[in-house]
Length: 349
Image (cartoon, rainbow, N blue to C red; front, side):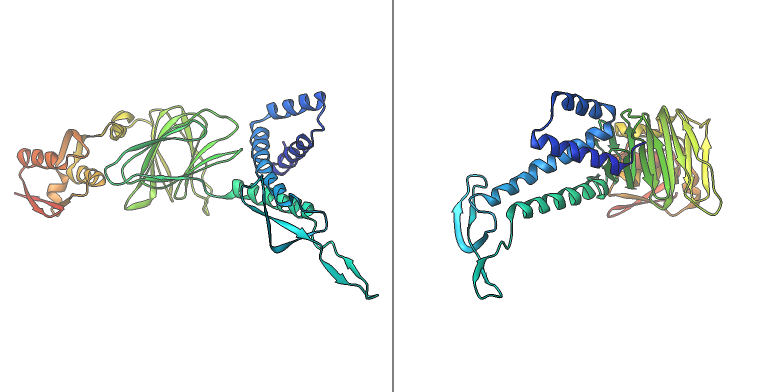
């Protein structure tokens, strides 16, 4: 297996040779075969070739300036390359030990441009490989979809945020808060990894959701609708094995490990009705239902009575229609409703 450094070095050699135009037909065929051998080869070549072309603009800085000549302050000419003023040059003289003046080649612009080019490639490569990628987020009550560069699709639930980092070897999604559903494009060479707190959820090509709980940030829920994923528990004093979660299964992970529910009480799709703007409850405690509604609405349901919170309800409700939900609860159960600004308080009647 080639290391990332080896791939980068090979790609750099091919880019430099092609720029010098010294590739024979056999070389062109060899380059094509190398590019076809691995997506990592293609990614490295495209990245470095783009940097090389961008850095070639530095050559314009040397237009009209001789070797060993330093640009003089205030002396400028119009450059056809840059569309802006470029420096003219004049010789710089220094006194030698013999007292005779001589021209001193203080700076060779070609060497300088080459040095900057090498630095640009090195810094650019490090940035591409290590920096964080784009972030996407939703506000309370909104659900948004985004298509990633690899073709995978992500649906972000209310008040959620992710950061995406895609490299030649891995597709990494950092779930900072909330919940997201992933429809992963198949790519066996680059695992699709969702990091939520201390939990890692690894997939290749599948459909699943990952949720971080607002008041239990160390707890993660994974719902798989197609294919399978691997949950890797956090590193701890006790080494726990990864857990495979297949389609139709639900798993919850925390610092204590992963709990797999291979036979959930209801179909997994019912846990994901939020994708269509609805919340589905089936013999759900009112306290849990209220907490779900609070995720999607600025108006919050507050339950101060434990008996009221234990009342079980069922049905389908629009996630953004908290007023209708509260009215139905008030009509169906011995519950009193009091409104205080953006708080709806439920107590026993």
